[in-house]
Structure formats: C-alpha cells, structure tokens
Image (cartoon, rainbow, N blue to C red):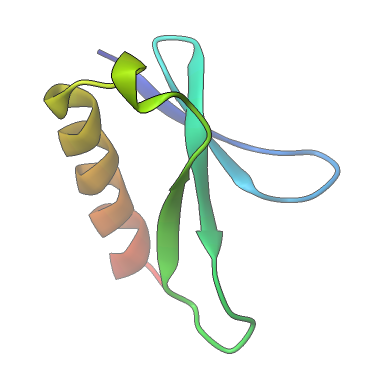
Length: 66
C-alpha cells in the first residue's frame, strides 16, 4: 500500500492518494490553526482499516512538522 500526498495546483490542498485512488485531503480547518485534518473524498466502503492506519500515520507526521 503506497500513500502519496500531492499539492493541488490550483487550490493548494494536499490530496491523499493510496494506490492511485484519491481518498481525501489533508487541510487546515481554520485560518488561525496550523493543525491538519483528514477529510475523506472517497466512499468509506472502499477504505479498509489499513488505509486509515496509513492515513493516520502520515497525518501525525505532517502535524509534527507544523
């Protein structure tokens, strides 16, 4: 399972892809808060527990760098 984050060229969101499937985005919910959250853009029945673990691990790394 490969997780890749790509910055959207026009709107600047961090799009999350797992095995070439766009599963959601990492975005900051409020302008005054640097903490990122995951917003799913994929049907939940297509995601497994392993997907959520990979997303959570990457989200933790992203928020540690903020």
